[in-house]
Amino acid sequence: MCEPINNLDSLITVAKRDNNNKRPYLIVNPKQGKHIPVRPSEAFALFKAITDKIDKNVKGENLIVISFAETATAIGAFAACFMEKSPVYIQTTREEINGADYIFFSESHSHASVQKLVKNGLLESLNRADEVVFIEDEITTGNTILGLVEELKKYSHDIRFTAVSILNGMSEQSLERFKKNNIDVLYISKSQNEKYINEVDKYNYNNANYVDCTEKTVCGYDEKYYRGFINPRIAVKSSEYKYSCCKFAESFVSDNIIEDNSSVLVLGTEEFMYPALMAALELEKKYASCDIKFHATTRSPILVSSDKGYPLRSRYRLISPYENERTTYVYNIEKYDRVFVLTDAPIKENPGINSVINALKSVGNKEITVCRWC
Image (cartoon, helix red, strand yellow):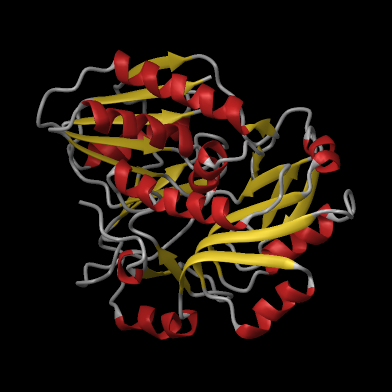
C-alpha cells in the first residue's frame, strides 16, 4: 500500500550538495525515482496526483507542457501523457541535439546552470497554444521559470503560464512576483526550505562510501535494442509519445522473463527516465511476486552519509553515457537478482555504459542487461 501523497514526510528527505555554496541542500524525494530506488507504482501514484491537479485547475484548451531536466522529466512526461487534454510535450535538456536551435536560460543554483529548450517545432506550437504548463519536482525561488517565461514571451505574447510542482518552497515575495507576471502556481505540498540549510549540517560526511567506477574497462553484460524511439527533447504530441512509450514498455516486458520472487532493478540514465519507468511499471504489473525497483543516474554531486535518517548512503562516480568528459553519479546501489539498464544512449564501446556496469558489479550484481531504445 502506497503512503498518502499528501503526507509531506513521505515526500521530503534532505541531502547536502557537494561544493555548492549557492544552495547547499537538495531535497531528495524518495517517491520520485531519481536518486533513491522506489517501486514504480509508488512513483506513478505521486505523478497521478500532479496530473489530477492540472486537470482540475488548468483552463487552457491548447496546452504545451514543459518539464525540467533532469529530475522532473518523468513527472512532466507522465502528466502530459495522462492528463485529460492532449497537450504538446517537451522537456528542457542539457544535451546537444543534431540540427537543433535553442532557447537558452539559466538555473543559477544548479551544478549545471545552463538549460536549453529546442526551438524546432516548439515555436509553431506556441503560435497555436493558449497556455504553457511548467512541471517541476520542486520550486524554491521560481527564478528559473521566470527566466524561461521571459524568453518564451519573445515568441508569443498572448499566452498564459502555470507552474506546477510536487513541492513548493517559495516565499511570499516569490509568490507575489509570479502573481505580478500572471503565472498561476499549483503544488501538492508546501515545504519550509529555510530550515533545510541547518538540517544538512547535523550529519557526518566522509569518503568511505565513494566508489570511482570510471575506469574504462570492458565489462560483460547482455545487450538488447528496441526500435521506435521518440525524442521528447523536441516538441511532440503527447498522445504519440505515450503510444511509443507504451509500445517500448510492452516490448521490453515480453522480451525479458523474470523468475518469481526475484529482486529486480530498472535503472534509467540521466534525462531518460519516463520510458524506463514505464517499462519498470509494466514489469511490476506482470510479476506481482517480484520486488521491482526503479531509479536513475544523475549529474547531481551529493554528499553521502551512513548516519541514520540520511537518504543517500553510497555514491558511485560514472562517466556519462552521453558525453565522455561529463561526470555523473548513481546512489544507493544494492544487489539484485536481475538488473536492467535502460537508455537512449549508444551501448557499444561506450565508456559511460561500462562505468555503470562497473558500479553495478561492485556490489555483486551479475545478471545485467543493457537495453537501448533507438
